[in-house]
Amino acid sequence: MYILWYGYYQTLPKLHRHSLGNRIDTLFVEIIESISIASFSAKDEKRPYVGIAIRKIDTVKILLMVLWETKSLDDKKYIALSDQIEAISKMLGGWNGQLAKQNSPVK
Image (cartoon, rainbow, N blue to C red; front, top):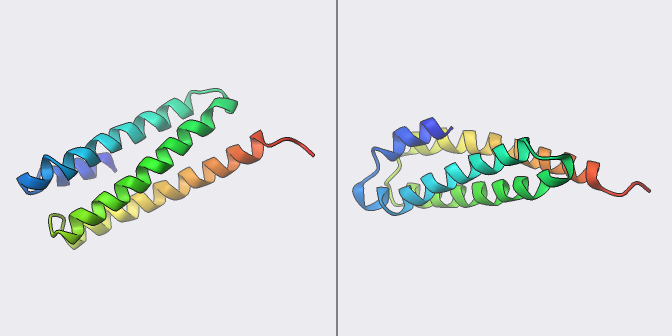
């Protein structure tokens, strides 16, 4: 997904490339970092990083919507990114739910 975004990022109008585009790009890198840390952490340490990735991907969704609403991102590009973001959001949500079950006290 990041490679797809990076291609679109290069074509954003200069005004948004250096503001919203730059922020979205940073968030994508931070999401990748959080997922990477969670992947290699101990079971009881994963959940906070997955939570961070979920919050950041939700922020990316909103900022991409702003780019789309301001016509800086066309419909086709917005849909392509949104589809991939939704898939990743579902995976992260499932991972978070699984971690919550694993880390909950046994009754």
